[in-house]
Length: 117
Image 1: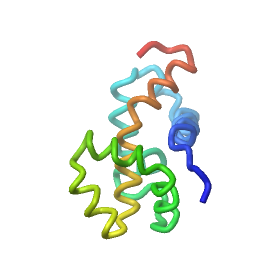
Image 2: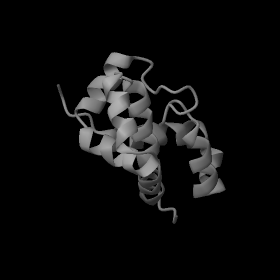
Image 3: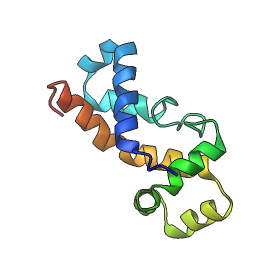
Image 4: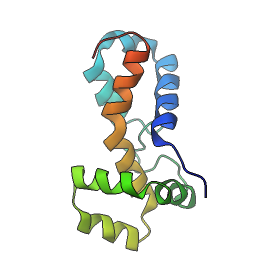
């Protein structure tokens, strides 16, 4: 199992999204955040899956359990996290991690482009 880097992959996904939606750069951080929150190619939150592959999502999550726990502490609770792991709901956990990191990674994407947040 390789260690999947959520931050780097999300930064790449956001950069691709900006290439497809250049007008959004001028819209500012909040409108971009709101749109990316429901963009499957970045968070997977609209459909409930980024990978559309439970096995792949499981690989990503299993190499980032600490991050998954932090995400569930932020958005839910550890009881829910344990239930999702027990039920092997890897795509749900994967999307939760992506939503948890969205603010941080989007800020980085803006800063790389020289935009203030």
